[in-house]
Length: 264
Length: 264
Image (cartoon, rainbow over all chains, first blue to last red; front, side, top):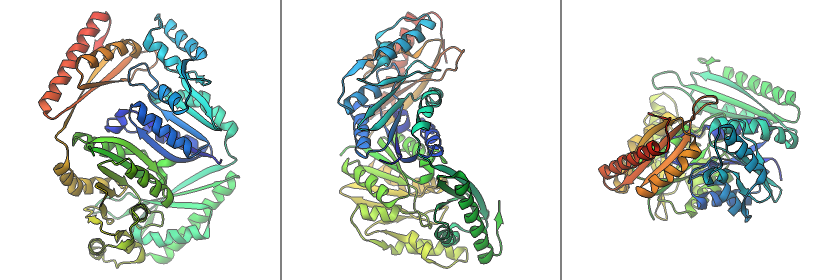
């Protein structure tokens, strides 16, 4: 089933533009450098039906891994766990291991379990809680039809801590034998549309390389184009060599075709 | 068909985590304050099939408006316009109005039309080009089954310029009679799970208000919770009043239930 990953970001704050989705970018970068292929990022609000739809649609595309962020806390609009149970057609039950994690957290603060706190220990049946080193809501890991589904909190510090302590070690075991490399070359003084045919040639010559141009220039200045050159290979040195070769071809073609330019 | 909007963000750079999706947040905020309801944000890579799928799925959910960003430039991997034509089952043709816009841009730089530049004038049949005040690729506006589909470039400066000059004036004409208001209250010293039952009560009392809590605290410090209180109404003053009432109830309940806390 390949090594595709989908990310589902959950939270009204993302849909009203209050919060920029830095979680998805952070996860995407981690997953890319682990060799996975992030295929889609979907953002939905704090509504059960919306989360269930996003999960079911994602499952139907059969990625290897689905990671959700957001909606695991104690308030009324934290609905990810319940939606996950519904999407999987499993009962939503108190997970004893999770309850123990939550109970200990609040005990250390001198607080008792309440209905809103117990809620953070409710998970789809047969889920595995992922301890939260810096917050109270545990993450959730569950398997469905060979797909690993991982739910993480939306608070960036908590999301990152659970990912690094409990998800990344697991992903390192199931990751593909594939290494992602990248380099950036900045070209000033040549419009993107003039570089376009050169990029076509570079990619034809070094087939395992992908070159993407990002215009960065401002009005009145010289056009500034950032070229992002990436390659993946089972041998990291080979990916590096592909990139080196592509940059050589690129610089050669630029020198042959243009007089005035700057390269950084 | 309501006032739902979907945003589709296109670009490998978003899926590999090189770029944080600030475009989607910027658009979402603009749309929210115009009274629209952003229902979903989907990010896909620079592949025709992925873009076509995302577009068709979005169309099938029948939002009022779909806005895409990215993939309108001159390079091989700018595929949004072609994918849009395919998703709508329309021919992908040179749009004469768009060609004139592109030709003039390059003429002013002393450059001729090339195959890669003409590509930026190709659009689905019966589309309307949106002039780009700060770049070369025009935006695209097209109607399908009563849905307005707008494609904007991925370069933030170009996306914002086209939106503000050509999309926003149009949206102001079709926007709902609905005003979005928001306020932030910061509460220190009370854990989120202790505020949860209070938030439930506030929302029960002032039904047209939505209160979302965002933990912002660091380890070792007092827990710091940001409460984001929003309300929408046909009369902006009424939305403001709802928020005021909710904050009053909130502060009253906090004072009744806790001794030590700070409010900002």
